Length: 135
Figure 1: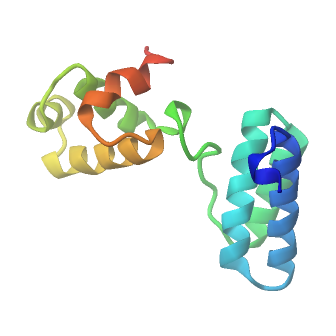
Figure 2: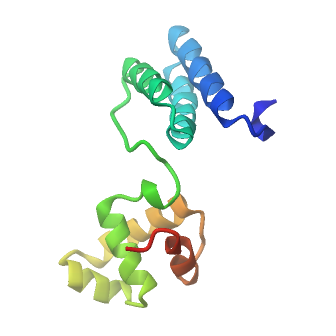
């Protein structure tokens, strides 16, 4: 019911509590999924107590610490952001690889992560997707 609601904080709290309940019934994989979704919403809503609770529950499932945001520009790692910025400027994967002293395959992997996190499907969409927080 809360999936379509504008009550983001309540949805985050519900997901974290669902994840905690799943963890207590030893369904750790399902628990992690709900806890990560709740954690991301809690971060976006600015609820530090809920963020801390979700992180504690995630640690109890045996999950490794991850970035707090799973999607959007702020979820990009430094390397992903650097590659995305070069790609948005029109550089080829080979040019990006040479500029960063990495392999072309590394650039491809980073761009794949960038596309997934930003919810885009092509290089042409990068400038607009990165535009909100361009350096």
